[in-house]
Length: 56
Image 1: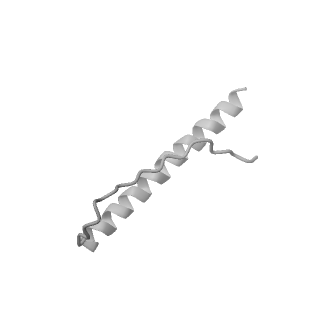
Image 2: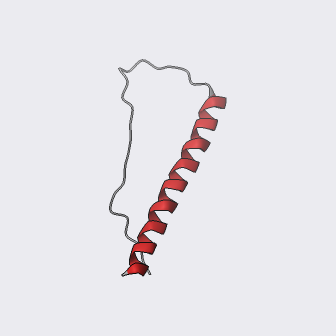
Image 3: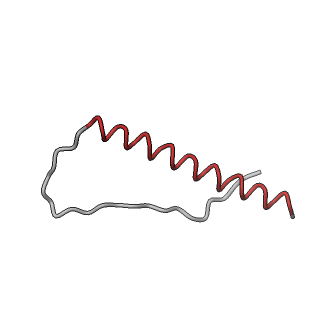
């Protein structure tokens, strides 16, 4: 059964053009945390959709 995702939230940060150095250690941990958060949100959304479809 295909699942259609109708909503996608994209966040972006815009700077004034000044380049700043980023600490790669904290950057990697932030990326991992964001990946886990995205995975959790998508999983919850899919499970909610499946539950709604099964209740019908």
